[in-house]
Image 1 (spheres, helix red, strand yellow):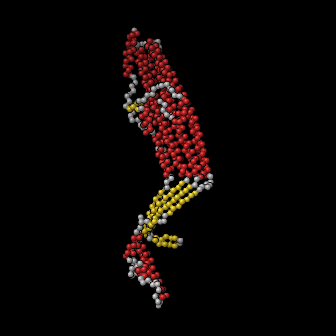
Image 2: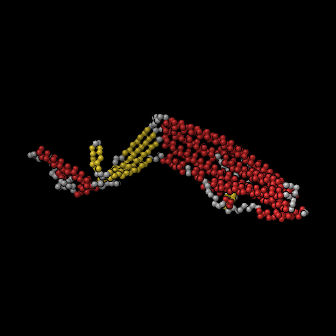
Image 3: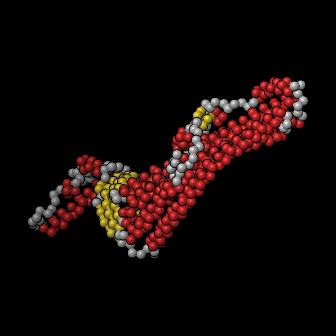
Length: 510
């Protein structure tokens, strides 16, 4: 068989191989940009939303601190029922009927001391610290989503590398099969090509699994579930590789001013200083003012008993009137009392009717009406007010202990800020060096990729001419896959290095 006939036969066997190539990547139904991912994360990330929840209490803390300059006002009311029976007081039993009673009270209080004066500044510092913590959480979330977005793009690129390797290995298998059919190679070469293709298919499956897991992790960090199957989600942003022009002498001062973690620690240092001032204010005097208004009602459930008690008292008054009249008559007889001291009608004087055995109808109604006071016909009590000035002298060194603890906490905060400043400087320098190294590594990996592709081309040409072997082509294809994968990793290592530098500085740099 001539060389041209063998070549035609190989091409005829290679044509059906296209049907065995891996399915192309499906067109995405959902496209996600980095900005969209970050916005979704800010709205839905559980960890970030937890930090946002701290803003409300911090704001109310400031309002509460200013409200301490205003007086407090308490209003209370009560209702009470006491059943009929006997009660003991001082060893004596008293009978009483069932009663209903109610009362009200209004308490006005105002207090001013050193802690009250220091509270607004302390709460404002705490609110600024909370805002700084929220900003830090937002920057951390942004970096977290960006890093995972880049990792997902890297996984997608690695899947494409694996898919391309499957296509190359299928072409190699078809070529080996064609040569075997025309007797230009051995069955060993064919089996070697089939094994190489199978291994590349397994690598593609694993790359697809890694890509799916990366997308799932991205949506988890965004705080939502994927809207569609992850295989139908595409990432729309791309990141060009440009030579870094960042100047280290510019980045370090920028990081010292913008790094969110460092700013949060400085805010906590302000809180600690405000706490020291608040503890020192405990030596100041305290001025207190209190005022109160109150009233009560008491209504007997048995109105007839009230009428009977009133009748008994008035009958006693009438009897005493008649007794006094008898004494005066004996003392002044036979002459009448010069001052007219004798009361002509004791029943009328005591408020009884003419028979002296009952109350007039008007008096009875008046007694009943006076008892009908429950629940809101209050009898007011006298107004009360007081002003107190107190000066703390000695409290078993409690103030000194609290002041010492606050000063120690402030010193700890100062050292924490200093330590973080050193860490920020070191991180910025390390991340800056990492960007430079990652950029240079891209050029090296690009050269390696070109060399590996040239090596594969030469190995394939040798194999087609019959001077090469199947293991030689398999090794060259594996080298190309590694070089392409390393080149993809180098590109995204560079982008992640820039993201890490931006996180260390605390602001975007591109």
